[in-house]
Length: 207
Image (cartoon, rainbow, N blue to C red; front, side, top):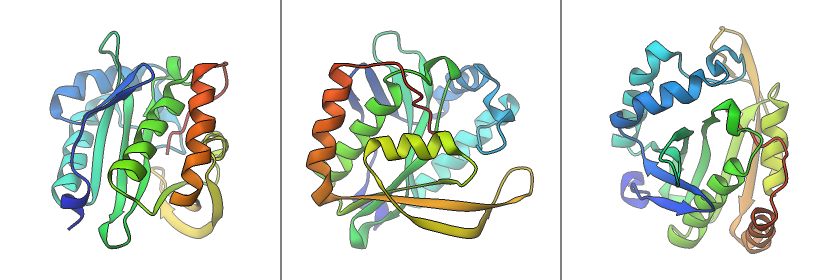
């Protein structure tokens, strides 16, 4: 079962802490989304302030069905909630997870946060869960997300045309990416070195 394969865990390193998402994170997520009014971005599904509690409740319901494993991304020093991320489309039979539902407060989008969080998630997937592959997907119009995923070292697998609805009702094409376990050691080392010598660059991956 997926929920036995991938279970909640605290992941910490490189200045960030990934805490299993709970309703206690709602105020922090509401503040993070307000930092940049992220709900107005067409290519993301960031909740409006009044919808944040329902957003978290839905994520927890998906977790209870073994479909998703959500985290709040927290600054390790201050405890400030910076955003959230998840494993989703969890397929235990082939030891596969996808990383998504990722968004951050605008003030930390040009920082180490996304690289650090993704490194923690990939390390947990490959080194703890024994995943064979980690995947990503994003809107074809979300060029910042595509660039961020590619900087992680993932391979672009292709485009699913007319694949999903955006919040405005338009139909999106979805770009699919993946990273294999055999590719992970080189990616791990490169990202680790990047975090040792951080430089400002767009790191947002809202998808």
